[in-house]
Image (tube, rainbow, N blue to C red):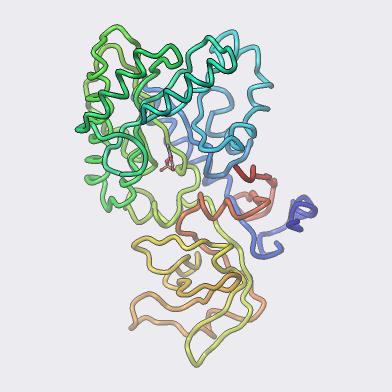
Length: 378
Ligand SMILES: Cc1ncc(COP(=O)(O)O)c(C=O)c1O
């Protein structure tokens, strides 16, 4: 068992430099600012909001994303995330059931999914249809059906004529928006998302069915105020995003947020310094940082001087090397000393956070004020 599960609370009131390493640090003021920004955009547009809970996988982060009850819908990738959110529902069960109706909406993109739901309903004698988003692929080539595919019509028809499914709406997730380097490029993907779900919704050919069109990924969420699309009358638009409270180097690489908008950092310890190769060794390797990349070379960056990057990793070791302009290169022995605690920005905070058993939540002065225990597993 990870020792942090027994000791995490004893670090409350201590600076990040006192933490056992490697450890995951969440800056609450930065996180709250990031969330407030997106809530402001969503409210100005008058659209719905459905945060994905997979980034910080915790009740505390979810409460903040839901504005403590102002928003009531989430997206989850795993049953563990849904289980983790159940206390929120229980706390407010009356409101959820009587005012809003607690609803699990599935995502489908294959006729077999409908067949499986029909078999399940028959086996369990369930008479209610399952509300389902039909997933549209807008260019990420992960899950979903392209609008140009005749399979989309097949799935729409199959869902429409099945007693086991009621079409709730159309959902797309533009994972490829992470390749955007400018706001213009992100706005283009945002428009592709809207067109993707609107074109799919028109295929349903029943103008009376109320549909939710769900779009978003953190890069397109960062430019959501650019939405100009006119939506069909029977549709409501909702934005979903997950990474936005935390951000990371991949988000900074899109040019839509800055280094200081990153709420997640890893604290590690310098184990050795090598003047002959101008490198330093830390106790955070691939398990503490993950192997994600972006246009920021290296697997993580030193927060106090981002031109020091993690250039190689093994399971539990990371190597700092100078990744900036050669002419400005610093000496490793001037920057690092054995035993020093260092803070790192990570490439993809969702994946890095998933490696840790406790999150140390700090204030503006990097003093630990809370600890959050994330949901693990699937
Ligand atoms: C289906 C789905 N919806 C929404 C999201 C949230 O996207 P992001 O983390 O870019 O905000 C994800 C992230 O992987 C996802 O897989």
